Image (cartoon, rainbow, N blue to C red):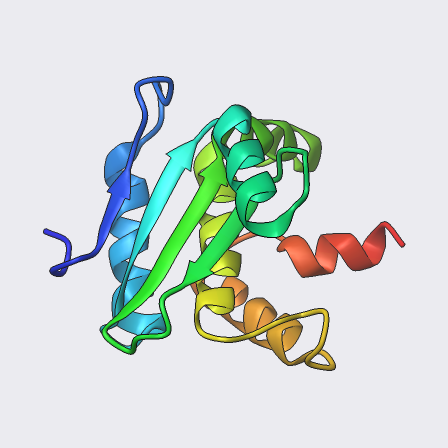
Amino acid sequence: MSPEGSRVLFPRVALGLDRKRIRAFHRRLCGELAGGSTFTCLLSNDKELRRLNLMFLGHDYPTDVLSFPSGEAANLGDVAISIEQAELQAEEFGHSLEEEISILMLHGVLHLMGMDHEKDRGRMARKETAWRKKLGLPAGLIARARRSQ
């Protein structure tokens, strides 16, 4: 069972996902990475991520992951993930959809914890790499972005 105020929300379009595995990963992030703090993760589609991206950041395009920090210690905030983007990226990088969702969720939670890879001189990248290794995940978003530059 998820801690109070912490959950993963699945849309109906998320058929075929190993929901148990994703929920277990979510609980692990809450317990180990977030030190018992909670967060909500919405798994949705490109249309919803585009809407959220436009509404909150002024960018009119879908994206893979968005983070909405709460500013509270007990509940870090919300992470939204596009299943459609995750599917494309999982195929591109040769791993499972659940692994890609886990990579995106990890990245989002680090943002909820106040990290910003665009401004922190590699602090978030180092933390993401260490947690990816600890959690047995393939290359994360920051590492992939650096390779493509």
